[in-house]
Image (cartoon, rainbow, N blue to C red):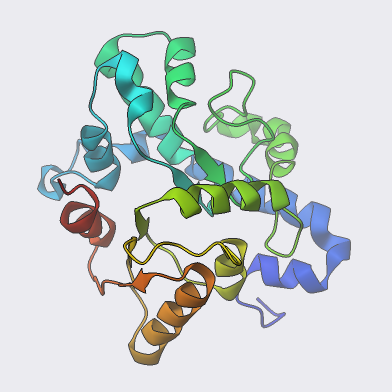
Length: 249
């Protein structure tokens, strides 16, 4: 806060001597939010579902055909809430073992551009536990921190995989994305631009006027194609975009 920087990442970029303890602090602060009960809203029927639930419904198929869903996910978050939600959905919907469901979920590419809480992908049995008990945070925080990459650190393997997935996509949706120049740069396709027929949409909650135009310009430069950022407000902006644009035909 006293550094005048908007994020821990920005501070650590200029104070690398605090990098290790900074990552440890990030992990320790984020781990308590990996709470399974927060993924479900059984206590508030007025919500009418959320975008995790909506996505899970749209991925509906037989268990054997789950991996044939044409979906790839690129996330700039460290948490594994979406993976955990989908894993739970598969286990409870199909009555399969955790191992069988992990294997099925691995067929849907999920790329963490800046790593995740833990070195092993969440679909693997040896992955960092999802929301360990508070008393265990000190035990797991070091392992969780080891999987974190800050935006100024090298993460070329994840960036390359993300660009490969984007280059093949026909419909791209940015949900809750800030269009930070560092993040957009991770997705830059170079000479391999997207086809003009590719649909690109996204939420712009919190952005206004020239900020939205600036976001469109960044994506146009990085991805090419037709950039159509939908202005959406309210607590269901991600759900709104998915319902209106992502699962047509």
